[in-house]
Length: 221
Image (cartoon, rainbow, N blue to C red; front, side, top):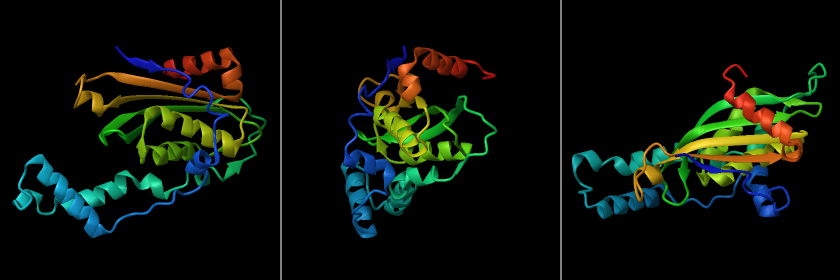
């Protein structure tokens, strides 16, 4: 059975402090160790598994892991707000819902650093301007390429779109499988977690929420 979490966090719009806003309005400040320190840390972890770090298959693993981490966690070097900076006002009076469905992503759980694999569905109600559709997908990707909880990622995506575009409302639904449930602990494969966040009109008007969910279920929506 799917696990469902709705409208998390309930006070996301009121509870943003300066540090939380900086998470999507500015590039994070990172204090990274050296390449040598990273590779040494990986060797320690390999030894912890009980394997032989000097065998042929593992000799270059520390370098590979460092390179892979650079790619998988590239979101820390990118500012999602910048992706939404260029908007278009020549929309011929269009002010109805813009929905981007099935944005696939790979992230990592901040608790166990194992993969989270899923799809994001993002909608907003324009207030005189729209943004390129690929930019919304890019925002999802930036947040996904950080250590995350699904609940926080859902709120972050909605938050930056609301903050930068200032639409009449934003709706975000994420559905994902967490490998921390599939590979360890309870070890339940195929369990999907759903999270949603609504702002503005979507939060105030249940009919707009319902329309958003109906369009997600409609294969031709």
